[in-house]
Length: 549
Image (tube, rainbow, N blue to C red; front, side, top):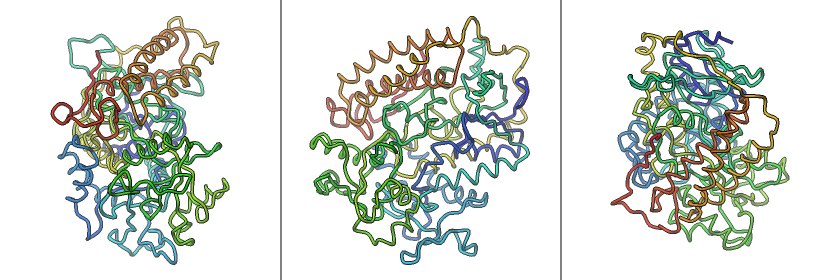
């Protein structure tokens, strides 16, 4: 590990697609340290099954992709950012292919997929393009049904080979170091680095940097049921907000419609691409219901599908609905979806013969830390990229497979600032104190942390989930304030641990989601409130921005 007083050129917090793509580019201009709280390949990015939305077909166009994104975003996408991301997509995909990512080429539905590694002479114009909900054309570039795993594997391998990149695993960022935190209120707030916990030794390092990049992903673990990995505790959003950065649109939490319903595998995602290839959602009684809810039926945008499933479950009293793939050719399914097919088989579900039980689960945060079109937050020297950021691309609802697109585009945009950052004066290390434990002692009752954790996730699911009401939101607001106060007291009395840091962060994020949801007194995109069921363009066709008090 680097000495805690080393000045790092670029400190990257998080090792998903956004963080690693930034690191590989910034390393051309200086030393990069990537800190990640578990393994380098343990991220929500690595679980992405569908792919990256981008225009490669002659039957498609940038304009159509832009229109689909704006339509799904329910009126509050930033059109300029949408166009920026859409038009940059093909270039970013070609770039990561040059880093070793192997995308699936045109699929022969009789003989199976032809991977890029097996057909090096083929061009990217012959990529196999999938179709997902909300898209009017086939434009999902994928690597079978393990796109995220393929991308992360290639990016981690490339980063480990780069002499200017160091990846520190088992490191949890606790808080950002800023001039305002140090009491320097006469100068603009500036990020100087972060305090970082070594989860194995419990030592806290003072890591100073010319530029700090938050790429920590989302916060699915705020909810009881989620498709996200355990690392998704909203760390970057919470740290940035505590440091003084503005956040926006936290009420727009996307619930993926189809997470596997199973007592053992409670967070395995069943890709939207299955519906793109002909999968049909049915009630347990066998009724195909999506045509009753949206003109696009099973290919409706995710918010509509999730609410439709929620409504059908409340109506029937069932625990799940069914995703029926039995109408497709039996030899096609294991070729197009080998990973999902293999996983389902291991759990006794042959999707060629029987429908898959599925339920919605918290999946993606469309809101986050407010940034400009280069990923810069409202705090100098701080950039936020990937799911932790609110760039204006997603608006009130994310179009399927636009997330990895955004991560790659904004990693590139943020890295474009690297040359000028590398030449700046480093933070004055002499005036920055090391982590002070004060009178804190080792925690003696872990049950206090686990109880608060469970309570937050349960009431967020019940009160601030797919469908909301004013009364439920008021109850959630009262309870989160009590829990946050309990956490504050515990935090200052006991030494920090990974569990405590994560609990503090999910409480912060939960409070932001509740505040934004209470503020928006209408229904739009992913935010549906029974007491205000219609959109109100005159008052609410805008972002919900919260700034620290």
